[in-house]
Length: 228
View 1: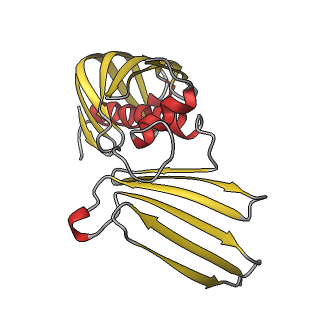
View 2: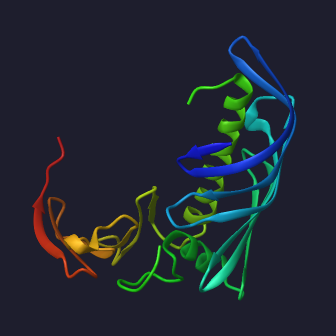
């Protein structure tokens, strides 16, 4: 099975029965991963060391998971274990050398263990195949949302295939400090690979914003806004 967003490349062994009744989908059986990898963010390749999806006779979303994936970074090797129902899986993180969950999540999101500017980083088919693709996408989306967004001590986290954004409000919410890591930045054209943004809420209508990055590209602006 192959999927591009997030990127999923899996060789599967399946024994599954698929049924469609009154617009509802039902699946029974098991799917095992022979080999493969998942890349939820550009450059973050997780090798699936163990993977098994058990369909319980209900819709694809009711599947049970038993997955172990490994991400190797120069700073650490991270293991993510996922077990239980797809709707609310139990996700466990570990690493060598040992780090806490927040550090591991930061490493997955940005390629580093703390937010700093600079430095290095970060179709149609049969009913059955559609069901497997749905499960594959849900596994990746739920897994990495939980791993990254829910475990970081941040107020905002946004991830897609081209960049990761993370930030936190300080000073009673009047100041926002954000970090952006662009995986497809064209540094030869002056685009920042790593960028820090600061926003200061001067008043309900006036905001000062500034940004600066490792390509020495940046700027500042004073913004007036009004709600209608």
